[in-house]
Length: 500
Image (cartoon, rainbow, N blue to C red; front, side, top):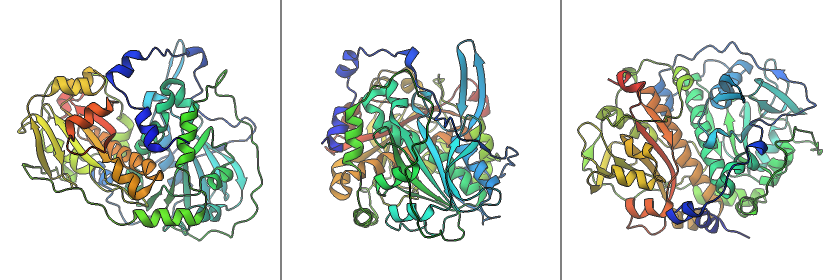
């Protein structure tokens, strides 16, 4: 069995591995970007989505309003649209491009959402699959099955009275078509950016939200009627508060048909082995794992060489929905400085703790190329985003470009934000499952940085990297450091005027 440490080592990028990569994409075999149940009738979701009008920076920070109403179907539709929905479409001679609410590696959108709920106002209790392609639910199981999920999570706090339990999954082939064995990392990267959107919109609507990474994998897969060797559950989100679930009943196998994703699928055993190695098999094991991870973790002290003061939330009088609506992935940065207070705001929002069921130590490191009032160099950020420790002074534009697979985007960006974790410590404390949690935590932080940059009139994009080169450059004193996520931020041509 492949351990997650082995998986991480075997899926690292290096200059040698990139040079040796002769893989080419089979465009005629590209998977569908959606999971489509061929024989189930759609349950349309309401499309008259009124904006929350909650200030974007407050929403990204997770500052909630008091709940204004119960989590009804309108609120559920709002949450799904701005986290996993299709916001725009564009037709071109070869087909159609779908612009989604959250960023995803390669724009392949392999993460699906399932709604497990009791009776809502106009939606009957059931297990429902969310179809972004037509903004509708399809009912897989009728009835209240929340208790099955509560049991699978080892009675995780916050789940017992949640109105809606949202399960995120990844269908491996939809991402592995391009990224092959590295896909298991992308499962959590892409779920994390989606969750960052969802947390922000939930905060804006006053909907409590908690993330659960610990659960019995096979039990969740059985509830959703999915094959965990092809489509795996990644996280459970508890949304809202309401009546407790009915007692669990029988759980017959369904075997529902879905449209084939492509002409043929290629199996990558390393992905399946990594998922199996990090799976939990009993509720008792889940409870023990969660208990090991609930104690707070602390990073080593950060020397305050630089202090940062973020903007007040009112400085950006735009609702979070408007920010998500124009979010994209920047394709080109201008080599121009960004204001210090905007950079400070991004760091502050990117270091807010995520409401996970375990605490995981993730550190933010930054290569600053051009920020007003800050010397170029490599820095480590404090846990609250208010201070920076200078680790390496100097102009590292060329270095940043090399570290990020030789991409001009990283060299041109004003700053590159890297999330690193001491994987030795993670595996010691949280075992194989800890790898899922730390990847997800870093991706949520990256998703928040993404949203913050666009709220501030800047651009952002996620990039990949030469793993060991980044770790040696940013954290040479911690041998077990692994790179979890990377976001580049800066001025785009469109954003250059708006950011002043």
